[in-house]
Amino acid sequence: MSLLKLIFYAHGWYLASKHKPLFKQPVEAWEHGPVVKVVRDAFKEFGKRPIDRFAERLDLSSGELIPIGYNLSLEDQIFVADVFGIYENKSAFELSDMTHEKGSPWDKVWNTKVTVGRLGLRIRNEDIEEYFSVLQRRGTIH
Image (cartoon, rainbow, N blue to C red):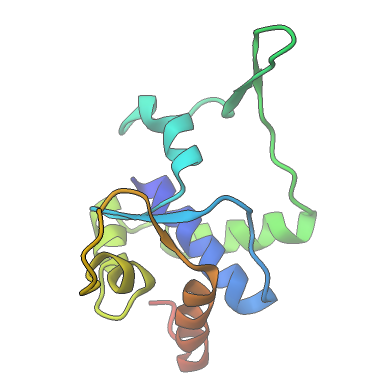
């Protein structure tokens, strides 16, 4: 769960700072907070254990699983490492609680008055950017 929340925070701060997404995959509102489903699916087997390998993708021509590396510029690697450093001492549940704050992008989607299903609700990048921009203007990390 920590990985999913850390990725959400890196994405949010990136949107607020650079005005473009850190990654293309959608962020969804799940019961315990924001989730990037492809990341969750790639690493769910680890549970609370340390992640010791890259995510994998199926090569359709060979039928083999191939490790997926990362494709970040040095500047973006530093940005993500800095964000992770800010939140690294928070537990998974603290991070989850932070994403549940009233008015957060997750809260706006999950606690909507409109009757909808709960799994796979998309959180718009515009809402994430707006939320983190407000935090940035206030000078708060959270």
